[in-house]
Image (cartoon, rainbow, N blue to C red; front, side, top):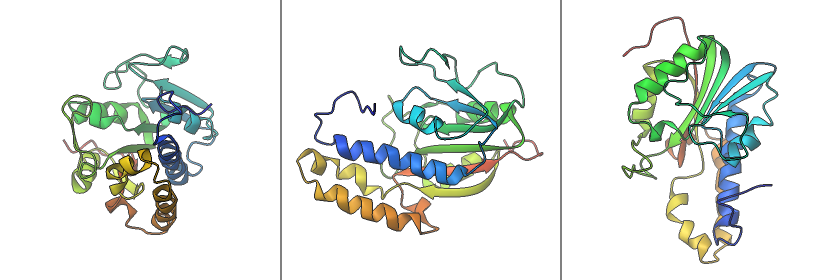
Length: 221
């Protein structure tokens, strides 16, 4: 069952569901067959949209980590993503979506991911575009601009691909959905199709997506 804050009566419910599943669509497109029959680690996996994504990866094994899993997430490890104590070089792919903005020190998170990834392994990492959703100091502790996010990831990994979700004005127009202007969602779906075909979608998205690879060199920090 698809859930968004367990409230289907919200005026923006349909828009939020589409928005979340569109993030999954982009993630799956970027990953391709990288997870097929591989060992995958998902950091921050308690949200329903993560569960929906993981079912489609075709992975041989999936380790799920979330510091605050839901009561029904019995197979999720309740540990700190920056200090997991999981084995070195044990995962082919690490997925880390909408987590790094909640971490005070991104270097702790990225160095931990680097440690757990096999040589040549892949990281799929995402964060809100700070131009669309600035940090609030409470929930989102840090914000990443277009250039800043690239520079942060490049300290540790080689960037293979980068993309953006729907245009960052989506967040601004959410009140329109709440007020019943459903045609706006239709137009955003059309815009999303256009963004799928542009190589510069990263620079316009509400969310920033990066696919990176672990090389043999040590992190540049």
